[in-house]
Length: 317
Ligand SMILES: [Zn+2]
Image (cartoon, rainbow, N blue to C red; front, side, top):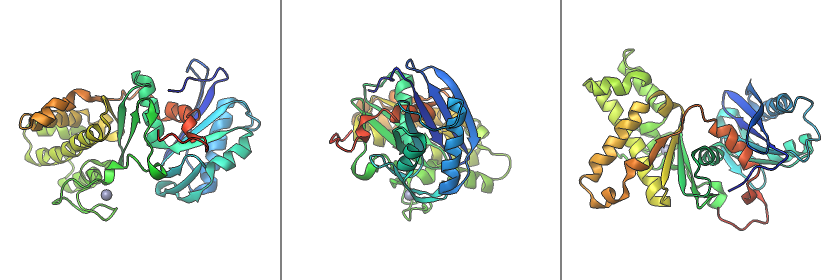
């Protein structure tokens, strides 16, 4: 796992609504921080990043060498070339972000998918940097990243971890990806919000688990749907990667941790009928990343140090 350079590093997490930057010293302490609204489109995103970096370094963001800069951003990211594709929420179809920022800042800028970066951040905070950890983000959509023996599992085209589009329920609604019953249909925040809106004003994500525990039948049906999605995502990551720890983050689990508790009970109930599942102790591997851990922006800083970005690297991690 990467250790922080003595010169410090700068992490930028670009989200659909806000862009968060943090300047860390060599011990990982936060020196300066900035949050600004993300402006859409390629030029808007670059301008926002430049402003946030200027805030963090306290001057014009140029000639930052030898500061290491890492950027986490949604979408398909060619991390070796720093190219971002199909970041739909940001209005980007293709952008050579790494090259443009490297030129603007006069230093090396590494770009990674935001959830892969967040996995590095989660491993850092949970002390699993050299181990086997999966991070699953339940935000508007669902995606994941695995760290295997201290290295990110990337796969061809950096695609590994897009488990939100793994179909698990042939009877559920169709997904925006074209398949039916993807994990994201069950447990993605966007789909949950749409279903809750149809169920009426009394049920919200905040009270869903509590209402289900109190016996509200509509709440039980929806909470079970979401919890099934969470549980199967956990099972998928553990079976695929052998992750010792499965860290969960994102708005859905932070607003509604009771749904994670329900997912853990579901995993235990499934294990009661399967010696194989029982042997995996799935529910014991699950933890929610504390909301006060800024995993995304710390991870972006760590992604700036990740040597699997180097073009000559042949490591799969
Ligand atoms: Zn899908």
